[in-house]
Length: 428
Image 1 (tube, rainbow, N blue to C red):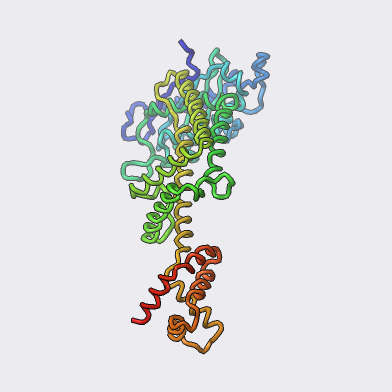
Image 2: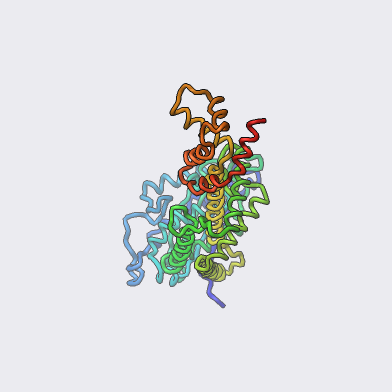
């Protein structure tokens, strides 16, 4: 059977003003609180750093072995001040206590005990408080001590609320009424301890692989990158889907009067089309599909590690929040890239469409620049009475509307039937 790496035991004392409290326990609980910090500060149980641990020499620190929220040892003055504060605050806030036993070899093979103390104070416990459901970790009062006088090093932790820090059913802040710590928060704490201890040796390398894969995949959906895959006019079917999506997005944005992101879209048809374009792109570019497989493998490797962490804590609750968030981040980036490009591409392409009003307005403007005395009515009349060469005016108009459409102008020149039709309309 695998040795359990982290063991956590917990208990609590309900505050003096807690409505669920048994009034006969008040005096005994006060005595427990007074002795608690003294126990943490026993001179025989001071922290040993890594070197002192190897040599078996107890480190003679001047600082008292009580670690505060900032990760530093409390002075004797701070210790006395903390005792008074806890006794006073116990009227309103429950006091929770933990004993966290840590496998000695696990820490010795990965980090210094002093560094683990700092990580516990600054990162692990604040995350644990959030997992418990407290609103703001900065509004918690906590302290702990590392005792290494047994074969199983362990932390004694005590914490309470400085101010009302729990949201009740009426969405109001209050001091927490319940004392029992949720089991999922305990399991989370156990996993966080192992991940923190093994961060440099196991977690970080796997995390780097995932982040590198994400960065590489993002290049293909970044309009500023040369590998950008959405601008591919040679693929007529993909181009058609992108323009169709852009048209649908443009309609919604005109209604709302602002740009929209993928996650704010409620239209099922637009979401389906966006995901369809994403799927088509992966099918069109084999190298992109290969990168996606590499990303999936990196995610699986991390998940295997997280499963292993849970198993070493005899924990059946597997927390894969980290990898889930990474997958959602990449997916949202790609889908938003498709949405943004489709919208902008549609607007750009739609602006190139030339209608008859555009042509006539440009003809009028060109003629008026050369003759300021002529009226708009005379310009149109003269144009269709052959006083001006209609076809050449039309071509010139098209060029002025969009300099990039010379070929379109040449094609338009050949459309004599259309020109004759326009002349006929003007005679009616």
